[in-house]
Amino acid sequence: MLTKDLVIPPGERVDFSNLGIKESILKIIASLGLKTPTPIQLQAIPAILTGEDLVGIAQTGTGKTFAFGIPMLQRIAVNKGRGLVVLPTRELAGQVEKSLHKIGDALGLRTALVIGGESVYKQLPALRRKPHIIVATPGRLIDLLNRKTISLNNVSVLVFDEADMMFDMGFAPQIEEIMKSVPKNRQTLLFSATMPIAVMKLAEKHLRTPIRIEVAPSGTTASLVDQEIYLISREDRFEQLLLLLKEYRSSVLIFVRTKHGASKLTKKIKAEKYQAAEIHSNLSFSQRQASLAGFRNGKFRILVATDVAARGLDINDIELVLNYDLPDNSEDYVHRIGRTARAGKKGKAISFATPQQRREVLKIEQLIRKNLAVKKIISSNSGSFTDSSQKKISSIKRPLKKNFDRSGRPQNISRERVVNKKYVQPTSNKEENYTSLGFKKRAEYIDPTATPEYLQVKSRTRVDNKRPVRAMNKYSKSSNDSDADFVPLMHNPSFDGGNRFAFRRNLYQLKEAAKPKRRQYNNSKSKIANNKGTVKLAEVKEENHASSRRVGPRKDFKTGVRTSGSKIFKSKEENRSPSSFKAKSFTPRHKRK
Image (cartoon, rainbow, N blue to C red):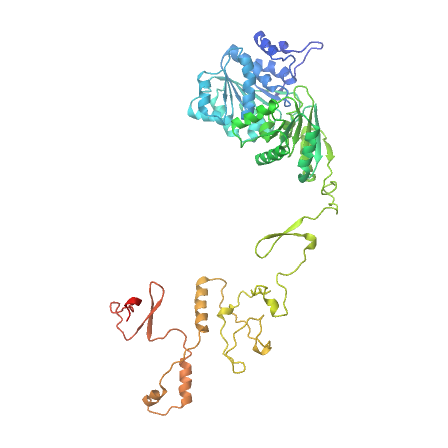
């Protein structure tokens, strides 16, 4: 790739008349108040008039729009054809269209603006008039190409302004599709303040031996911008912002990282009785235009914006650009601070950074090839900042530790007052096992394999010829607190860890085992007579006792389940056919005798 440097003879006055511009266009330029060309205009205009492809790298605010706009209008007026300018944002596209319309309208050249955020039917009348120059954003241009309402077959000059931002915003597929729609025999121009590798690959692929004009190295900032870094905590940023607003009385542009952060900060500034507006991608196009117009005409002194407003917006007399949040991409820093110190005026750029963001600051310094002045702001909470490698000073108040009580309500407890204690303290008294409301406290240790208390087999042992003693858990004692009455927990060895079918089966068996044993009242006398012998009374009692050990329902009854869920019984002696079985009928109370 070639690099072009314009050699100016010594003592010769440099103005637009020496660049090969026609007399009719020079009159229009003079009427606009432009007398001396900027460095990028001085080198780019003669090269573009020759029809060569070009890659231009220059600082923001150096007149790149007229650097490609003036020669493009002259070539279209002489050689016919159509010009296409592609830009990443709507605001930048509207600004470029207005600048080109000022020169092209006097020459009889029509311009059209094709951007998203507006109804496409409002833009169709301008396209039907066959404009000479189309200024568009990639998304809406591809939409019109798919609708076949626009043709790019006669494009002779193709311009990509802020090309690096289009790649950052993910417009690479749209750029490739636009390249397929324009003719191969064309002039292609690329302009930007930074030139990453992706843009250079695009230039190598689609440009024919382009000339590289580099007025300043990529990432160079304007020399009239006074840059400074404030090391400050996130909690103290707003207080410092209010101090800066009192110091700088003119227009202030504040950049934040997210659109929600822009809305939140704007509300806080308005609460302090300042006239502020916001601009980000959540707003409609008309709202964004109203915010920019109010900031330009002085209705709003403060504009809070995301990186939507960082590229190419020409707003004069901005006294301070404040980076409330450092940009995610270090290249965006160059475009942000380029909104001030435009057209030969001085400006101030201040960036807020925390001590943990030193690496981001170093990346910015490497890009702009300059060491930034760093100012440490005294924090109201921690005294002053120290290096990130050092420990924090002891005067920092410890934050509150968030705790929750048993009901789930959060409790703020100071870390200094937190005592390491267990959830349940061991109790010595029986009364301490219950809360003040009478609920039993949870035990300190619970065996998950143990059988619950309500499924414990009731003990048949008697204490002092009284009723059987109820089984107790290992943490409770009997009424007389004697160790002799202590019944340990029964462990279930068949517990398999959560099989619900096995659990239900074991539960049923445990319930049946816990039921009181039934006695069979058989006639012992008839049993003795039937056996035709004498049977001792002890043997009869033993047999009755053996029969009382039976578990489960009686064998001489057949059980079933009704649809309502209640059990029914019928004897085996009855007919087992389903037709002969009848459930017991219910007689209402008023019909009973």
